[in-house]
Amino acid sequence: MLEKVKVDKETGETQRIGDVSGLDPKRPSVEILLCLPPPQPSRLIAGIKETEERFYLIVKEGKNYNAALVHCRDRGGSLAMPKDEETNSLIAAYVNKTGLSRVFIGVNDLEKERQFMYTDSTPLQNYSHWRPGEPNNAFGGEDCVELVSDGGWNDVECHLTIYFVCEFLKKNS
Ligand code: GN1
Ligand code: CA
Ligand code: CA
Image (cartoon, rainbow, N blue to C red; front, side):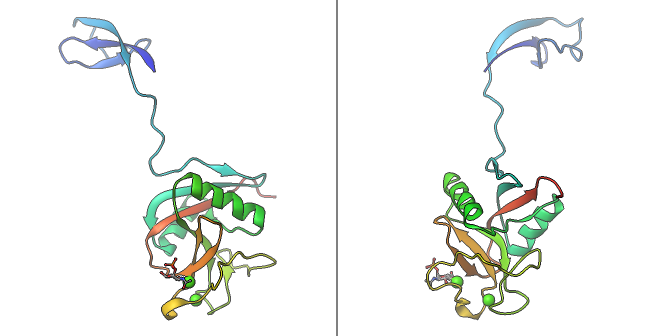
């Protein structure tokens, strides 16, 4: 990206041309053309995906299930709750595109073993996408759910620190 900037010869301070309000007019300065890198996207957010009703956002900050849930809620959303194959494969494609192998989704059996619920406290309905042999509550303590890059679900320990995907409703309908 080419940008024209003014450089203060004493301090080296630069300002974009068109905004020279902060430079001292009594000090000598020079106009030069600089080649600057384009603005960098956030390292922590992997773009965004959307359906007609919702936005999906992978957060590349490792958190345990509860901290991940709080992170999404603090921003007005929830951990993603794929309730049909279309949404599930959209999230899986997003995970793949981001180069990840797994993310927390908003499904757990914390309240009652083997009774998986979404984090909005609704039970799984007509849809789930368990990997073969899952959920297995391995080692007697897997109550949270990760979505693996092939779209399959696996119950894992809630204290694992992994990336996660939030969802945000576009409007209250
Ligand atoms: C096993 O194979 P891996 O690491 O992806 C296990 C899961 C457990 C997980 C715990 C087929 O998954 O059920 O949740 O370890 N998979 C199988 O780390 O037993
Ligand atoms: Ca369990
Ligand atoms: Ca498991």
